[in-house]
Length: 136
Length: 134
Image (cartoon, rainbow over all chains, first blue to last red; front, side, top):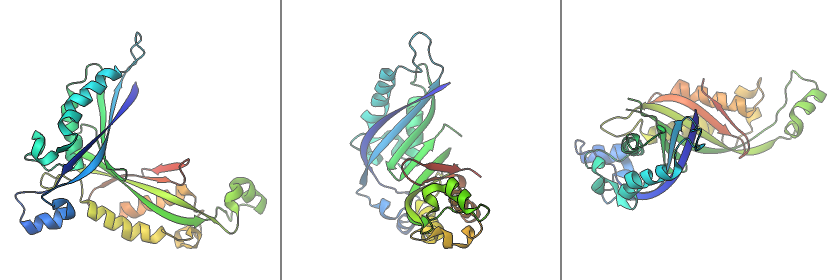
């Protein structure tokens, strides 16, 4: 089994708000991230797939294909977007780094041809990142 | 759904690697430059990984302000700009990065209860890094 990781970057804005919370509660729980006008990050995405090396191609996965899927499923939807308003998953779910990693996993998992998705890592900043392994 | 959240923190501290259990010559051979009696320092990077179910109300494994507050209070103020050899936990133990990594893990494991501690990573320099999972 070999693991292959492909990186990508996207920039997007978001804010944290739960409509079931009072305004005070939203401010207390989410702090500055509750600003309704949003704020932004340069996100780094790392997608790790795993599989056996194909004896004919020597590849775990066709990198070109992986790159295309990441572009189509993730970057086209999230890059230079206001996540809360433009990405369907986040119309009713808070676009935290945790939820972004889960949403990216769900967008990619069924679209990969040969290799199996192992991990989605999303860096919100170089000092903060979330890993999702598809665990319930 | 279960996710892992990792956060990186910086501390600067000094230490000297010297074991009372060894002779002077042995200390010198084992620790080399790190045995310098006046000590030397590093910029350490701590990487703390916690895990848990993503809370549906907040979208979070745990609130970052709780994790940051705990680490700042219990780890960064304890070790930042200190001479590690002067601290009680290193009175009998050599303050290697291995041992510091274990100490930090134990502090978080004992005191932080908002999420499950997975691991503590500690980079002494860009070239050397350690991790402890309990």
